Length: 134
Image 1 (cartoon, rainbow, N blue to C red):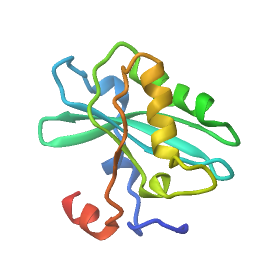
Image 2: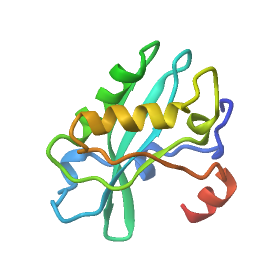
Image 3: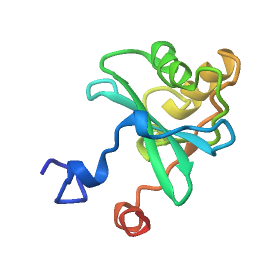
Image 4: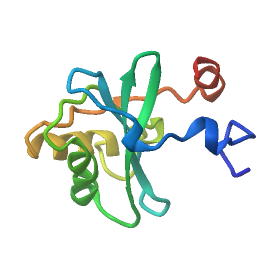
């Protein structure tokens, strides 16, 4: 168990599948989720809806990097694909020292890179509700 973890069990055989066992068709709905971080890691995942399952098939993360470099992480994940939406953790929307929240700074940096990754939208922080959906 670690801080922030909702599920208290992990079953490798049930929750992890070999990526070679999944064919990701171009028409599958895909989206990116992310958690901004500087001191703690910034982490981004790419997901696809495959039938009645949501599959996470890629992950990138980094630590102690700025907005411009952070924008490269989801852009790398997107490749040539189409992903919508891009859910970003609620803490990225907080006002800090800068007049623009991290979410807006990151969104602007993504648009500057051609918009292959959409401008982020605020993810829900409801872990219990999310767990029930899963």
